[in-house]
Length: 230
Image 1: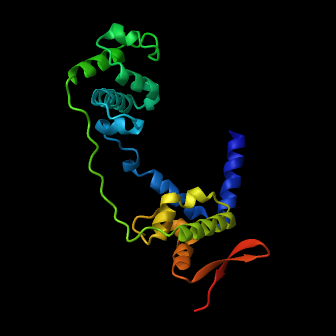
Image 2: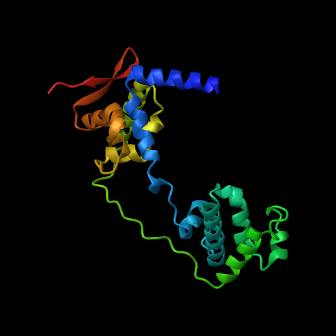
Image 3: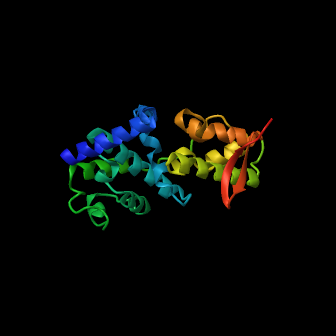
């Protein structure tokens, strides 16, 4: 415990020295957003990213995934503490008709079939027999103003790397590939890199680079950011 206190004090001192306490506060606030952790049990099957459109398989997968999600939420435990992902996929491939069939599935923990959860799972699968396969909800269509230029994407990636190195932050914590492509295409709405501390570190310069106020040049063999005169 003492060792952890020492680490905490060092981190706190470093944050105070670099003026980045607000960065941490911003990230903690985002993590406290309950919507980040809310998951509709009826959509839990999508997390498993099935690679087949087989209706029978998808129907069974939706049932077992929803059952697991409800059990995990009720018991306040991680999903894999109820049943692992690979078990759900096997159950969907070979839906058991009863407890004996469930017990014979090798990936199912020994004794699970005769447990309260096992009986609940069998009941859920029986009740959903003959149900239609799940449907993906309509996703909002995002229309880009234009397709991003590969050259613009490359320049923004270089700028991201330079600004991340200067800030001593991993580039992926500032912007991901989709952010970069959207910035290159002028599609700024909802881009995380244009908010909070990420905007201060990278976002403002990304817009300036895009509008011709900044440039990437070589200096002694190294890439540098150059501010252009009006």
